Image 1 (cartoon, rainbow, N blue to C red):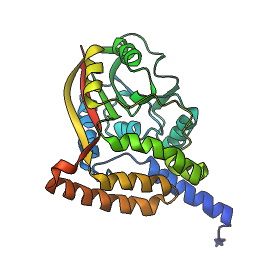
Image 2 (image 1 turned 45 degrees about the vertical axis):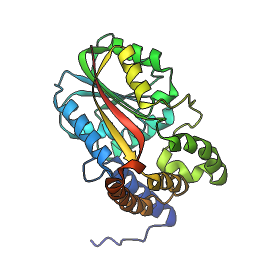
Image 3 (image 1 turned 60 degrees about the vertical axis):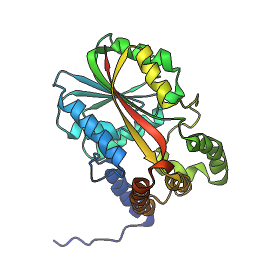
Image 4 (image 1 turned 90 degrees about the vertical axis):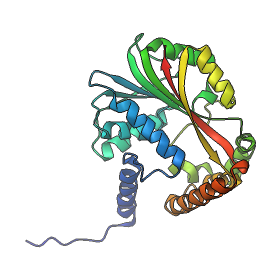
Length: 282
C-alpha cells in the first residue's frame, strides 16, 4: 500500500522547525561548537574536572539556566550524578524540554535560590557557577557552598567583571534595548529566563579573588576572557538580533576571529570581559 505524503500545514511546519531548532540547541558543547578561545579553555577545564569524578560523585551547576553545560558533562561519560540548580522555574522547564528532545533523562534539576541550597553538608564533589555571583550576596553564598563541598572539591566560577568599563555601560544600555525591541523577540536566546531576578553588582577580578580566599577557597588558577571594543559592539548587536540566531551565529564566529587577530597585534586595547576561577575547598 502506498502512503501519500501530504504537505505540512503552516502550523505543523512551524512545529517541525521548532523541534529541529530545539534538538540543535540541546546538543552537548564541543570545542568546535564554541566560538572563542576563552570558551574552549573553559570547556577543557570543566572536562578535566569531570573526568576525575567517579560514579558516586555529585556535580552541581549553580544557576544552570537551560542546562547546556550539564548535557555536555553527561555526554563526557563520567557517570557522576549531575544536578542543575536555578531560581528561575521557566529556565528549568526549558532545560527539561531540551534534555528530552535528545533523549537525556539522567539530569536532575532543583528549583531554589543558591543561598538556600537543599544539599547535605559535604555532599557535593564538584560544582560550577557561571554569571551568578552578581545576582547574590557573595560572601553568604560562597560560605554556604563551602560547607556543602567535600574537602578538596573543585569549584569553577565564571563571572563578568567590572575591570571592563564596557560591562558597566552595557547595564545602562540594556533597559533601552528592552524598551526598543520587544521581549518576545528575545526569548530564543533568553529561553524564558525571568529578567526580574535582581542584579546586585559586578565585582573586579581582584575582588572576586579576595571573596574566594575570604570564604575559604584556594584559587588554583584564573582564565581571562579579553576582547576589543569590536566585541562590545557585537554584544549590542546580539541583543538586537536575538530572533535571528542562525544568521547571527555565522556573524559572531567571524567577528570573534577578527577580534582575536586584532587583540594579538594590539594587546593594549583589550578589555577583560569576564574571568574563570578554578578553586578548591580547603
